[in-house]
Length: 430
Image (spheres, rainbow, N blue to C red):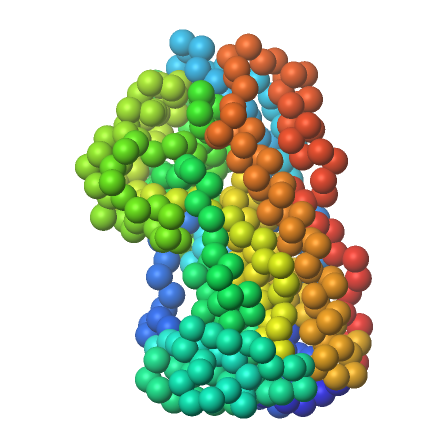
């Protein structure tokens, strides 16, 4: 199938990937609507892609060796024991590449074909069938058939019709409200504190204990475990070529602050209430080995933020001529280490479906079959891992490597979704 106008709502990682997929598959026109008027906000946060998923996605054209990345090889599970760096419970293989969110987005943006129209500062207010009555798109109503074109209404009031609209607009998706009315991410009952800082600052810690690499190798991920939570610490590329940053994510229940967390949101850097910052310090002082508490303390308050944890598995990913992608389709807890891979694999499945389809109806049906069950499996795995690492933590201090490895296998349950599922096929060249 060739031709047609495609709109992509959202210009982030999933949006760039889907725009590229549609352009490569033969769409006549691809338009990306991004609400942000300039460069997408970048907090310097990290994300990871499993080595195997990278190889598959690179072969399919969704990742590029030129995008800055940092190699990770081992994950050290640690618990407080009175020593400076804690007791190593388990040395787990961890074959991943870490990325800086902003650098990954810029790389994917550069991979987007020049034929794609990327419209910054264009916020979408509603989507639905092209034959919707005037005003019927606000809030979203997708009761049209797969034979009816889709309409996009911008907050400015401008409307445009397309053969297909892709919702890549994240966990607060306008398009999802049209595809699955009332489906909203649910608060998991805990949050994560996140932060990052230049890795060169590590040199101020334990200056007489030898080089940093000897006690915190750059290819290692540290996972500090404590009652009611855990913290993952790893390096990512820095913005300057050849530089590195330390990125960390600490999961725990928050203190009672009066903050409303049932509505999907995040608390940006520099806006943390004093009690949230104080509680972070209390957690690290009480539960962390001294070295790792000092690592977290190297992060300035303006580079620390809180993200409530949500998840959502939508009952369907398509309706009429609308399709959901990335976090608009499934919101998965970060424990899976699969967020970026999930979005890029969605685009891969979309391109594969397009190249095999003879109609829009066939394309939408094939995409639904390919990604629906995978998305639900990722949500389930994320809940299992969140329960085990935050909500119902074991007695970490009593565990050795054999017990912890057995515990881990019980959580993943033989699932292939940690780091993302394997791709089953590659898009066939035309």
